[in-house]
Amino acid sequence: MPKKNTIQRVTLIPGDGIGPEVSTAAVKVIDAAGANLEWEEVEAGVGVVQKYGKPLPDHVIETIKKNKVALKGPLTTIVGKGFASVNVELRKTLDLYANLRPVRNLPGIASRFGDVDLVVVRENTEDLYAGIEHRIAPGVTQSLKIITGKASKRIVEFAFDYAVKHRRKKVTAVHKANIMKISDGLFLETAKKVANAYPKIKYQEVIVDNLCMQLVMRPQQYDVLVLTNLYGDIVSDLCAGLVGGLGLVPGANIGDKYAVFEAVHGSAPDIAGKGIANPLAILLSGILMLEHIGQMRTAQRIRQAIHQVTQQGKVLTPDLGGKAKTMDMVEAIIAEMK
Image 1 (cartoon, rainbow, N blue to C red):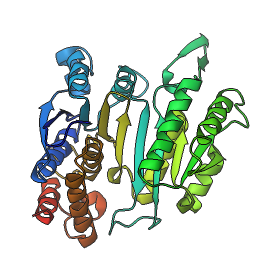
Image 2 (image 1 turned 120 degrees about the vertical axis):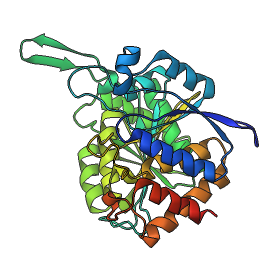
Image 3 (image 1 turned 30 degrees about the vertical axis):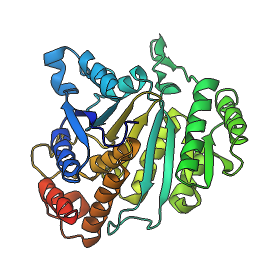
């Protein structure tokens, strides 16, 4: 974390589709809030493959290593063919082992539940997403689920440390150890050991399918969820749906040395260039970034302005039930900070 009053240089990756639009929006709001930042913009995604020969150029990784912190718009991942996911490659290369997804309602935004406030902590580097798969024979494939004690320990410790720092009361380990007794069993055994070192935080366990049912019935019973990679990917999106969708939740990928904050929604090519993209997800991710680097007052200033705008409900993008343009919403948020 940089010293107080020093300028933090941040790598900005605008992304694909609506990425450049929402990234521009985020920068405008963050700068208007008085953040002590300097932006270094670099290109990545499917749009740069012809230019660099791959969607994640080497210099992007080097820039993040130099600046330690990045803010990223959505990047397109081609399904079933082409290049590997840029998001996955970033996490692996920089060892961003913790995916953090706080999920809470925004004032004035209609959703199925009105009092959701939970945090999804997802292991980011292994499990089935290790990408170890092959064809055994025609029509037969195999993917390997990799779970290690080391990765399990550090993600559960991350979840408990987060709970302590943010005054959360409970951590729930999510698993399928009743069926995958060795792999998920190792994760669960590790979680129990880690929990013993945090006696002031309540610890519980839940089978992943039961968790999904409980979440759509009574999400208020959960506080911090810690999950392996695949379960975390699925459950984090499910939780976003509880408060209105991926356009309303932030995301962060955090390691011991580097952190990448991102809009977790897709690149939405169908509305790219129309100026109507919802900027809230990347803005909320920017708030997480500001908190991460110690600029707490600026983060709170932006959060309060966003809450004022959503509560009033007068300047909202079409996906939120309004008719405003992206920049209309940006200007409304900035006006609330003056």
